[in-house]
Image 1 (cartoon, rainbow, N blue to C red):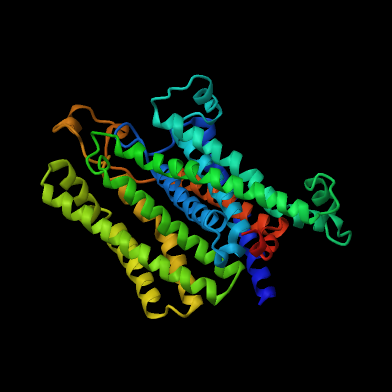
Image 2: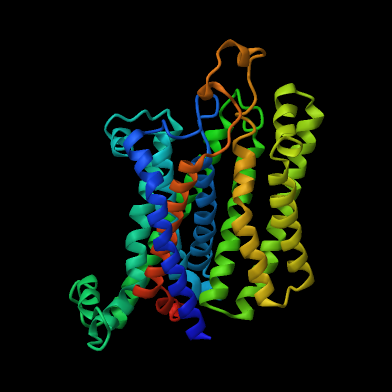
Length: 412
């Protein structure tokens, strides 16, 4: 079983290196020519990359939730996933930062947010809380894996043991007092991360909800939908990773039941949003909803999201709740199809002209609402996804995030 898993990981690492090479063309186009080679424009300024930003946000939220349940609420059932969840937060956060930086403008000018801040801007606070998450989670991961780093550094037969000795800051012993100290530090950081993380995730929803000329977004329900969406996609990710790295029926099956409840709650909120939107009979809302349900990309909603991404996983979770493999399969399906949800919430509300006749005033590709990601946008996305998966796979091989989790019961 382990040999098959190792072979599978090696093959996936090779695929990710190929993805980096292939995606490099899109990255070159973006860095050399800015936004010109992309398909988004003035009326649809947020495209595929913002959808991926929201997608990575959801994955981050799921891992964040596990860290909070493990280290704040001390749920021992999840203790083995603690270090892996903290590492996952950092990887998905890295992907999120990279892809949204490429979308917003010049990535190297991000420092201007801090030296000339506009405290009334939601984007400024978003940058602040992204940095805060990094400041919290990097040392947190270090404290969780320090014992294993010291052990690996002392193992002269292990490849790269000198690197682990360096990462352990030259320390060769790990006493019970060190363990208690690291446990206290970890718990302290977990308490700090709770309000910071909640504000960070809520701020994403607020950025959309405060836009008055976007009728679907401008709703008090949107932040709640964002939170539920993040819990669903992120929870599915963690359940799938738990099956891969910490397979245990006692862990996977309860997580599967939780994912089922979140999935049903999310579908209820979606149905409620559609019902209220159509009943409002407001032209802008109805037109945007029509683009989702009966527009040119109706199949993204009905086939990819509703059928494949919701009904199939729901069936597996209801019909086979005791089968950990099928539970993990259902979570994998939810995770990989969830980009369709992000696209459906993002694009249609921008694809409606806000003034009648505006489409006839000027005609230019950048002044149209018909948007579909072009090859360059997909290549950049492939590059970021490949980088994230490669970082995760190599991190789980070269850092003791899995091994550290096996002794976490005493720290929780």
